[in-house]
Length: 238
Image 1 (spheres, rainbow, N blue to C red):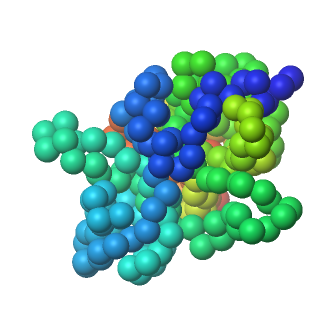
Image 2: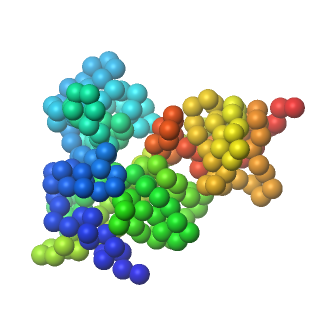
């Protein structure tokens, strides 16, 4: 399987700034991945590159930010004002070093999963890569946000994918299953999960009011911004 061939149409001829404008042509055109710098910061909001607004509650893992911090942002255009607004902001302290000969021309971007088949994961209608790139408890699901590290082959439109991982991963200890609706549910009133993509102990199915430990990733769901990828029971209330 040739990852370069699969991904070349998506990344063809892009640099960091070009990427944001060309992504509008993909199925997931509502969102753009932008790498930038925090240029203004107040108590509950800030600006990236002086043009992209964000609320501080969209910062991944509530990480501290300062003016000058490098960030990756997933951005959408406001339907009313047509201004750019970040729906997720991730501080990046270890950007790939362009001067490092072991990592020539490596770049980072944020992508949203648009669909998942038995073997492949799609980040647009025509752009996909195999699920075997992921291991462990993480099983990608539609809406999950991924951090992709890639580089362009010099003089060509081919792309090398070096790593793909959840944008952010968080552990929650002793939280309660607060809602169950068919195969879907909610933990702690704020984190979505689905049995269609949930790693649990063999034989265990979450039930209402179960007390669990959970592993959570950033994900765009209908009413939630995080998804449980793994869950283990701590106690059960009867």
